[in-house]
Length: 271
Image 1 (cartoon, one colour):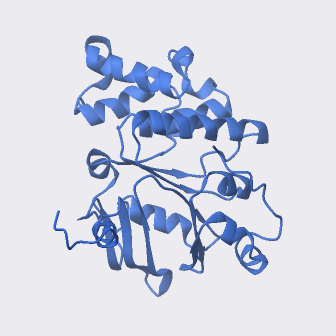
Image 2 (tube, one colour):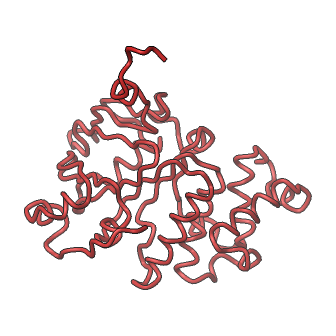
Image 3 (cartoon, helix red, strand yellow):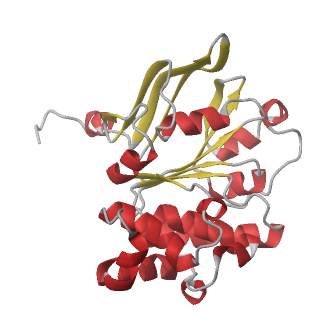
């Protein structure tokens, strides 16, 4: 290290896990996003919030490569990933929970996880045949199931799981890709109040155990946002209204009213 280089200069040159730079997305004359810039740093859990129509779904689809921005850049680990698609992005180290249970309701938990593991290991021709004969694939399926608390449910048909277990399977399918960054789109929607906190605790613990370096969630439940987020990205009308820590965000009544209504959240942070 050059002795003349300050610590602040070193930190400033660190590459974010991912970032959007001046992203805008148009559908004809309709502007879904306008000049959206934010980043995810190593070790962060950030939440994207906003009212219906704010652009949350669009930014998630842009960040995960499903959509290419009309203007601007999306970078993952310093490389442009705009429009590369979720499969290629998963192999680079970013995974999104895609609700595979809804896509493959007749598969068992084991088979559902095998689809994701086979994609990562490039056993894509016939993952189910590989599952019975491939000890590496089988071991990876069981490892992921163990981390997410699904080991005892491996041979259960996915459609018969409880709603909370289905959510965990969605998340486990993303974890099966061994991601550096995981993106969750309302990971506890449709789950009871009691179960949602249990799911989030399992998720956060599993991320630490698996070496996940950053988490982004889109979430409407402000209790979860307050408890788990390091930063909150608030969108309104396709633009970034705020990028701030939870304590600052929730201490501003005007901000809360503009984005989520007026109900104060439980500000107890997760350990």
